[in-house]
Image (tube, rainbow, N blue to C red):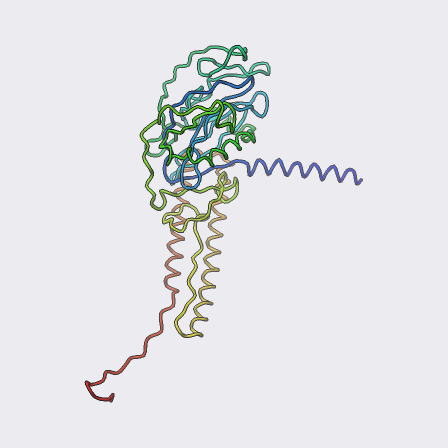
Length: 386
């Protein structure tokens, strides 16, 4: 009996780990301004049989975009292909949808990353009999080492260097029925080598857009996290770099863990200078300074009133945040299209700003007024008061 219980406990723990990995592994980021254009670079030679190309892309951290170099990666299992991540306009911000491994290449925003990823599907290779066959017309492969290759000419009519979908100047591409079907298949998160590769890129100052102006010194690598041997520099920026305007909401970048507050994102510290919050989770609580009117009893009374008001506002905030979280979870489950997501984000932004305006007015009205100063009687010149 104890053995049976132990086996059940082990199975439960395993199941919990699997569910937790699925729920919290995916990451999204939302930013108030668009990413730079994709740089122009050459693909490093494939390091060995079985590696699959994962294109470079712009990620975001510490109020700046940074370039994650393209690299060759060993897939998590035979038969899996890589669907690149992409930036898409969400109605109030650009949202980054992380890439994933699966049996088919799904929607990646219509972004032309090159090397087989020309905006729709993948033309760089295919699995056959447990081996990956490389299309040499779009991949840099040494045929003396890798023999499972073929040549199929691909006519790429999508030569734009734009790195995002929707919004001003973005790519106009929408998910097809096939894309939606692929999105509902079993997916695997980026492998540890990809995560380490991205984290190392985030720590490299030279890969920040504000430093390299869209032309990173390390545009691609032969292997993940190897930024030295086999690394390739960008030949040129995909478009003239324009620094973003650092004012209020346009400079906003938020991150949260998946299915927590905003499914698919990682939380960043709230920005007190953010005038146009999009979600309740981005709003800081209103804190009033301790009153100091010179009347101890009046100050105590005002402080009690402030505490009651702050508690009520916290309840309003929590209620709206939970409501928005439920709607985001529902959108994920029902696989909302871009139009439905945009309407939801606009509604959330309006709800949040109305709550913020209401709380600001309440806090201002509750501010204590200074005690009136005693009036001094005017004295006639050279005389005494009456």
